[in-house]
Length: 278
Ligand SMILES: C[C@H](O)[C@H](O)[C@H]1CNc2nc(N)[nH]c(=O)c2N1
Ligand SMILES: N[C@@H](Cc1ccccc1)C(=O)O
Ligand SMILES: [Fe+2]
Image 1: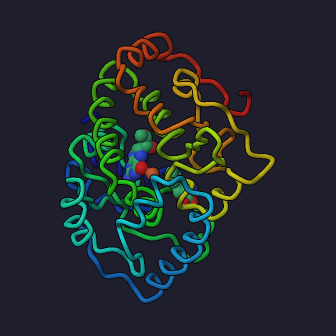
Image 2 (image 1 turned 30 degrees about the vertical axis):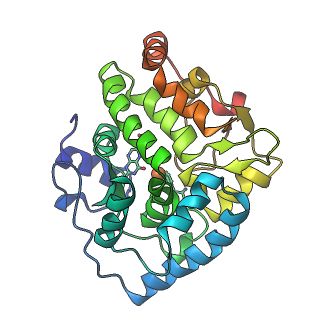
């Protein structure tokens, strides 16, 4: 691991991130500490109700199948209970973290079938969009698809390959690929309408509608090398959304790590491409 918890805590505080990193273990996990207020439970219910109406219409099947398997979302999840269910379905579990954690530590969790979920929730002033991942994003956005065996295996493989590619200097490029697919990817299968795939869209009332329905959303066909070279910002709507022709195209990219390693070799350290200019 490249960074100590103490150094990372200082960096996050300087950036105004909300998590309390003082209580982190070396792998950046904490206790969930299930003691949410009635107000927080009400925010959770509102978020789920509003967002479920949208995802039914705009989310890709892989996500909706996951929601059906995971079951009711009527109160803030107890991570222990959910982990027990996930372990039976796909061998995954969820672990609590204080918020964003460094990419290398994040990918080590994925490689071990542990998904990091933030232990605090956005406020009712942030129902539509929040600039850093909170529990609603991490849980509502990511966890449903982890009940689906194909996606569950893909996420573990992502973690494993990422460790290797980071060692080659690909930290930024492998994070961009994650960003523009797992977080903000769209899918349009042959003859089908455009659907949202990424978890950052599933958890945002405002950006999910923007990405799929707005004329101002910029849709770009998925291309591995272009994606790995394109910069992103976490605190605004994306300037470009990459459209996968199928989930298999993303999975297949990982079957050929030599190709990814070559892309890293060609572009590491170079200035990134601007998403607005694709
Ligand atoms: C892969 C990429 O760096 C990505 O932003 C990672 C980093 N750290 C994270 N940390 C948390 N808690 N949740 C996330 O989704 C991520 N994503
Ligand atoms: N913008 C997302 C949260 C998020 C922030 C940063 C990274 C990923 C997701 C939301 O509103 O739900
Ligand atoms: Fe995420």
